[in-house]
Image (cartoon, rainbow, N blue to C red; front, top):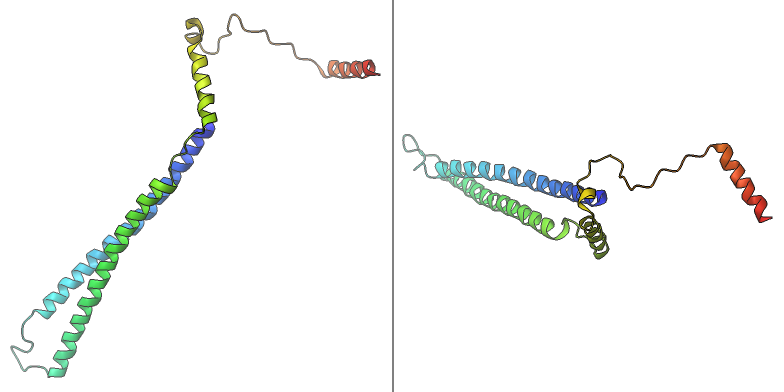
Amino acid sequence: MSSRNMLNAQVGQYRQDVAGLVTLTTSKMDAMSMMITLILAVNAALSDAGRIGMHGAAPPQWLCGLYSGCIASSVMLMGTALWLSMHASLRAQCAMVSLLTRKVRLPIPSMAQLDNARGCGSGFEQQKFGDIFRVPFMRHPEAAPQPPEQSDDEDETAVKGKKKGKK
């Protein structure tokens, strides 16, 4: 039974590792999404400020064109980065679900293990009530006595006696 518990604990650690890696990726991508959204808001504020040079002399047209082009390219790149960060976050969550449901599952016991457990359970159910409710670590009245331990000298004489009997 301890091997089953060890397998369950090991798979539980694998599941925690997968969840930890996904949480790391998801939190990083969520932070990036927040920063990208703020940069997009700044770009919108810069592009919608009105006519440049309203209170003074207007800058040259080529400078306005460069300014608008930089803001537009920044909006496009930030939009792409936002889409990719959202995609990475969702893809990490999908990968976690796939791993947890397909690869890192709790081990299913084999038929031999189930039969062994069934035998232990039925053996317990067939005991007498006195055996079931006895005080733990107390000797059973019908238990077999422990054989006395032999010394090393008795072991050697028993082995020599067996060798002589064979010849």
